[in-house]
Image (cartoon, rainbow, N blue to C red):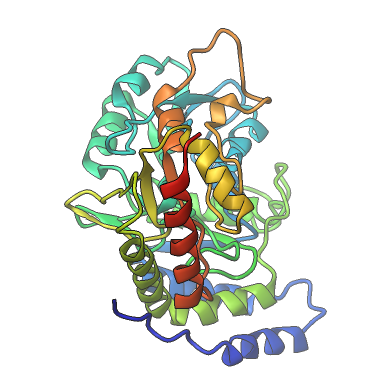
Length: 370
């Protein structure tokens, strides 16, 4: 088994942060943010990038920019975290939860079609665990129904499918830079778009509408404080310079751990689509053991973190704020989450960590009887 590429030294990551700190306090400071945005457009081949305080803020700004508001409906996969749906609600719209196909992890388009109404404004595909659905199917579905696509690509930096990069399928792509993401700054996010009007709206929206887009006046409408702090922008820029190295390491980490688990009974790696270049955000295995969710939760108690075991991820439509007795549950999403071991990695995890994970998982899979 080949080892991992070396961890990039972190000593230089703070240099830009120190420069940013030396210029503070400066309420109008945005030099590092502007440079980071320019670097993002080059790295992701997008015309515009808008840096914000979180992935949730990125979705909030982008959905506002495409006109989502009170009375609208937005199609959202149930196979996601609550942070995807929260901005829809905060804009006064209603998230309508759509099921997913357990065989592909892609949207269940038959279910989505049945849930489109005259009020449906947009669709928010979610590239959970860095896995990307078919962009051609998504574009065709949205175009036929006049829907705007705003991608939740929070975990998908570096993924592409059929030559289409995650975050560039529709009107806007929204990313998170929370620590643990491949491209990280502790907290933060960004919006990618080729639409200058959308970018201008997002920039105004992140800063209380103080810098309005053309045709608008300062503070003409309510917005929010969603700016990326300058020290974090400097850190994000430093990590963007080593993004390809970080991506290479994550792919090697996931490959290493999946290889180490080849002898674990009842666990089968989930393979990406043949035309998908996956960023390997998380090692994904189908759990073919009895009571699979309990197995993932038990592993978490033993120090092996996963989406369902450590973070208790459930279909978003079952969360208390969204659950409704008259709504048919999204059973495909539930099946995917219940039967998928999505292991949580960070760039600092090394061979020793993965060897321990593999030993624990294999031992417990052999002994599992629940």
